[in-house]
Image 1 (cartoon, rainbow, N blue to C red):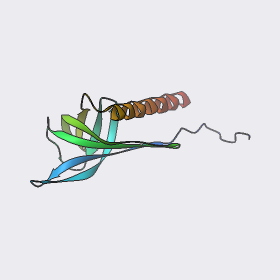
Image 2: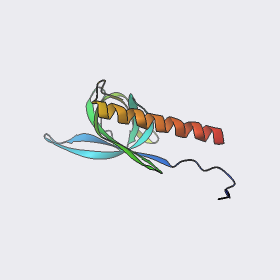
Image 3: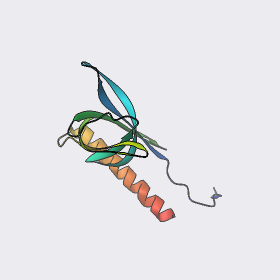
Length: 126
């Protein structure tokens, strides 16, 4: 088949993230957040509300959607290492727990690898 595109298309990649936050004394709820940056050690997120306090612990759920499937991390514990307010909302820097299960560690590394390849391809095209 002849290639008819004028420009090479980049692989489609999208990352969804949620954090589990306390609601009241005994309840909790999952809240969708926007991913700003990511590596296998942690993640930067933006939330609409000031949900987290520095040094607090949270659960994070990740899903990386690509054109060929998805990689998920159902839950990984993280600590809030940084927070600030800017024009986009509330920014939080989260560090994943140091010793997650082997399956979680592998998924975090796979996500990082796919994002690195995607970024490298995007830079080549430009």
